[in-house]
Amino acid sequence: MIKLYKLLFKVLLFNALISSLHAQTKLDKNKISEPAGINNMAYKWGTMAITATANDTDKFRPRPTVTSRMLGLTFVAIFDAWSRYDEKAIPVYLKDVKRRPHKEHTLKNKEIAISYAAYGALCEYYYSDKALFTSYMKELGLDPANKSLDPNTPEGIGNLAARDVIAARRGDGANQYAEEEDSNGVFYCDYTKYTPLNPIDKVNDINHWQPKNFSDGKGGKFCPPCLTPFWGKVKPVGLQSGSQFRAAPPPLVGSEQMKKEVDEVITLQANLTDENKALVEFMRDGPKSVQQAGHWLKFAQEVSVRDNHTLDEDVKMYFLNQITAMDCFIACWDTKMFYDSSRPYALVHYYYGNKPITAWGGPGKGTMEIEGEEWTPYSPDTFVCPPFPSYVSGHSTISAGCAEVLKLWTGSDTFGASAELVAGAMTEPNNLGKRVTLKFNTFTETANMAGISRVMGGYHIQADNVEGLKLGRKVAHAEWKFYNEHIGNNTIK
Image (cartoon, rainbow, N blue to C red; front, side):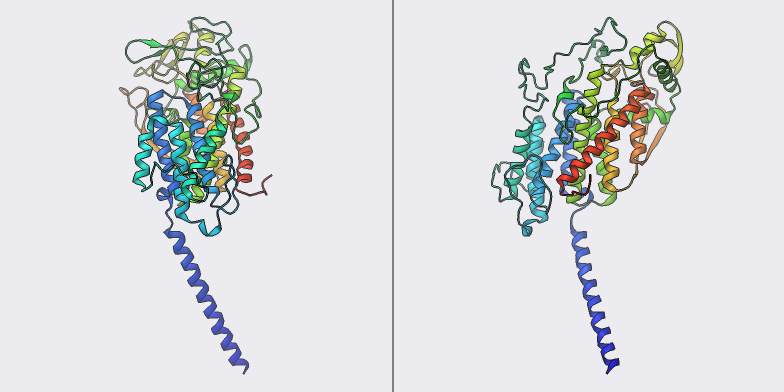
């Protein structure tokens, strides 16, 4: 009898294991069947946003602060729409829309909701590309003319998410609609009336920024004004204010540190290898640039492909990645405009004037002896150096912030991406170097490479880089806490 019970127990156990195996197999098949990587809908709208950012650069010249906000708010709208089909997520700006019943938390509903949210936000912020977004909605089989605000449907939730983000951010300090006093109808106009202490033809104080002439590529010159000097006043998404982590003061002319760091810039730029040149150009981003926020969105997409992300995973990762980039720009500009510091271009000229130095002589000239006042960054004359104060480096701040949140989100610093390009292609196309493969082994290393590339290229001194990296990582940890609150995870303090 005991043997019979043992046999019966074994049979029941075996059947239970088989049933469990079948159930697990069914779950695995369901998971596999969900579009992942480049096929998930969040990834697809990420690609559309990157395309729009590249187009924006072509139409309006580089404006990294502005495009970081456009990208950041687009992914807030996507997150807010998606949150109504998640068990715990809390929207940022979407109001008075209840979480949908669990049975409605389907992939199709999520795809529809985030598509309408993305479409509404992109049409608002990248208005010159509305035809592109409309065409894409039709390609997805969705009606771009559907303006429903019914909170019981995914179309309505998506439209409401876009509407509420747009409404919440009107008057946030970005001056998107020329709503600030004396804007005279000019979008993103400087309402702070910033005036450089140093006009283009005179240095009144070497410790402060001076605008520079660029070539217009047609034999003439133009002098770009300071880019969005008011940006530190823009309301962040996850920070308390742009000044929350303001950096300590930079070194000044007359200090031993400043002289040492100016000499370091000259030496690094004079000894650029093909690998160094490729890194400088890759991080500068070149033609069809998507700026730093877009660059790190592209890096995040590489993580999505690497890890075969689902829609849910990409919605959350892009949201964190892009609000970090947006707020890093705000924090960076707060520090930049507070100290209004000088670029290496002016500093090298000040320290060395008509004294001989060994440096890059210009496109196709290589390293040679020139007078200090002839020195320029490793850059084409159509873009001599960024038109805004130096301290801290934007590349360092945004790269460190985005790298840190990707490390936190994935639970690992491992990245494993790479890029292949020809050295000199963006700066001296008639004097090309060899083809170079840049390897980005970790997120932290990638951020550090972005930062040091700006010193190598002659755009920043080392203090700009080091303090920018610190600032970005401080912002990242504040964003990480904000993100966890909005996905309903209260264990992060």
